[in-house]
Length: 217
Image 1 (cartoon, rainbow, N blue to C red):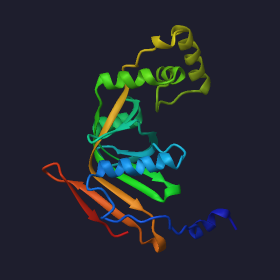
Image 2 (image 1 turned 90 degrees about the horizontal axis):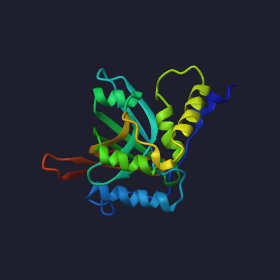
Image 3 (image 1 turned 90 degrees about the vertical axis):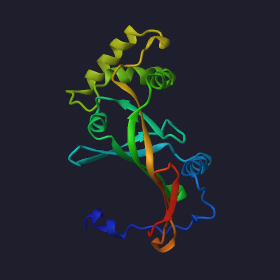
């Protein structure tokens, strides 16, 4: 018997906590801050890792893990190469979604909204804060393009190390920067026993306020 044939038997009963309307903050950003702080306190591995899903204008989706690098009541920020697959898809279709999965806390957060580039000043400031090697990597990698070997990247990095011998001398590549997803919908999911999970969805209204609703699991 192939081990994969047992995949249907994999299951877990969630029992850690619940999510009640009386406990959840009416502001979804405040609620996210609370859960994110708890993920940090729990010392989870990379609590800022999130799935970013984008799609072509025809609706063909793709998804990958990226890192959250900032958030406030405007939106959620991540950085990448503008010429990458996700960058090209966002240029053609600026609607996207994010998913955080904190398994140890039996929680996930789903966020949907429109994506726009952050300002050049914001991208410059974040790029300057990155480790030296990461800044060189942003120049060396033609992200999402086909390359013949890893050696191509390593040769580029070696050349860049010579070109930019001082850490402070590495400028931001013109095709690299940040995006901000400005949410129109945020859902908080808390695992519960017998698959009767708690789901609270916040939907932004025309006047900018948020409507909170409970969804069936």
